[in-house]
Amino acid sequence: MSRRDHDIRRYPGARLLTAVFFLWLYLPIAVVIGFSFNQNRLVSVWTGFSTEWYAAALANKALMDALEVSLTIAVIATIGATTIALMAAMVLSRAPAKGIYRLSEAVVNLPLMLPEIVVAVAVLILFSQLGIADGMVKLALAHTAFCTPFAFLPIRARLQGMSRDFEEAAQDLYAPPLTAFRRVTLPLIAPGVFAGAMLAFVMSMDDFITSNMLNSGGSTTLPVYIFSLIKRGTTPELNAISTLMILASLVIATAALVLAARAMRREA
Amino acid sequence: MRALTSFRLWGLAPAWVLMGLTLIVPVAIVAGVSLADRGPYGGFDWALNFGSYREILFTLGWTDELEFAPKYLVIIARTLGYGLVTTAICMALALPVAYVIANARAGWKPFLVYLVTLPFWVSMIVRVYAWLIILGNEGLAEKAWKFLGGGDVDTFLFTNGAMLTGMVYSYIPLMVLPVYAAIEKLDPALLEASHDLYGNRWVTLRRVILPLTWPGLSAGAILVFVPAIGTVLEPMLLGGGRQMMMGTLIQTQFGGGRNWPFGAAIAMVLMAMVVVVLLLNARRAAAATEART
Image 1: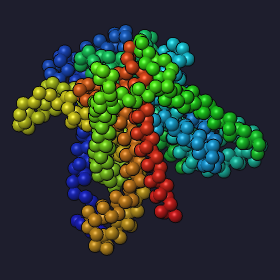
Image 2 (image 1 turned 180 degrees about the horizontal axis):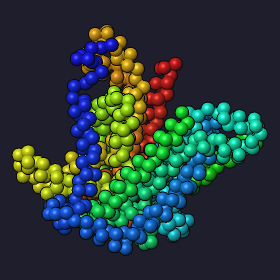
Image 3 (image 1 turned 180 degrees about the vertical axis):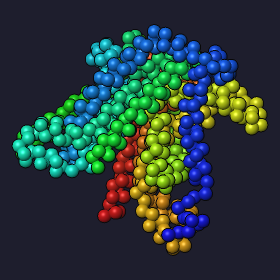
Image 4 (image 1 turned 30 degrees about the vertical axis):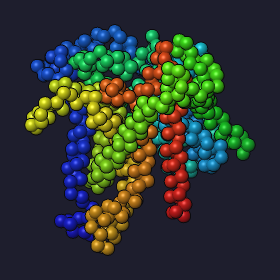
């Protein structure tokens, strides 16, 4: 073993840099949350503590409408993307990685490989050609597509690391394939499915580029609405809205990670 | 066995239908539209017209002669430049950070990885907005600058630094995670071997750590570079429109009454750039696999 005072694995300054990095990573989040409690109309001049901007945000009808659109689309996209991803992952983790299967894997991950703005333009033109005018239908389809790889990757990873013995045992005991899947495989890969669904949900809620491109009267999502507010100027109300969004993200992320970790532990 | 194969194909069908309908067919249509005529009120009329691509390089002069005009080339170059610099900064930052996380005490590692990923779950628009108020007039950045004795500044917003800060902040988790995964796999015995062979830290970094984490770094580079060259929010909000990028250029072409075929042509150029990067990466990965066997 190397001596402690001359540990080759230690790089001078790396720890300090990492500490600064984490501060920098959380600085913007802290600033938004902090100034959301500012009494002043000016965002960056602190005059006193107040929660009035939260009241203003919650009373904002346009904001609540945007939130409803975002949640509706995110739920539809999450269900659609997770179902499609699960089916594809079940097939692709058992098939040889060649020919049609290899191509299919690339197709499922296609949204990750193309710049989102190109995909947004492409769906915009497609919907205009098909004459689909309903904003919600457009958003639901587009969101389902770009959420699919985010649902797919954790499920695929989970299936990859899983022994097939249990499933085969179930089949040896005359369980029909669907029963074996429901009673054996699905519970085993549940953490992956859950993580995938969470990722898909957040990606849908977070999306700006596609939603902005497809934006129309009744289908303004939360990020697109926030963007329109930012262009009108920064206000403490925006900070309050952002803080609520940050908290929602943190709660979902933490819940997902804690549940996934617990599922892993039970299995071990 | 037959039933199994048919189930396999059925299981893949929804993914193919979805991606075909929302990506493959639409991208083919975009390729078609980039060759179409411009519609009188936005939109387009089908045609076979390379005018949109010509427009990237040339403008029509008064007497219909072609004049070379680099304004769109400048935007393409700027986009590539920002993409590369963002990727480079992310690599330089992610390597030490991932290294420290990988060498942290076992109980801390999952927590630190969680801390890296957490901001990524926060909506992109909120993250860019946060930098807008930090860098904006009388924001934290300006106060810190004056506190440190810096002279008068007009604003930090709408500068290269503002854009790069926003872009690095947006994409850094995509670099830290693959690099961390690569360093995690690094066998400590190799570092000790390097030490025993009289390699100091920096030789070890250059000759052992860097080559072995290169797969992680290059995977991270792809993950950062691809969204970085298609970015829209940072140039619009932090660049203030003064710093037009390909993403914003495409976006502006699809408003009402704008030039759809030209926007489609720029989108095709952007996509071609991404495809080239992915192909280069695939070739590199294939070569690396071959070298190993």
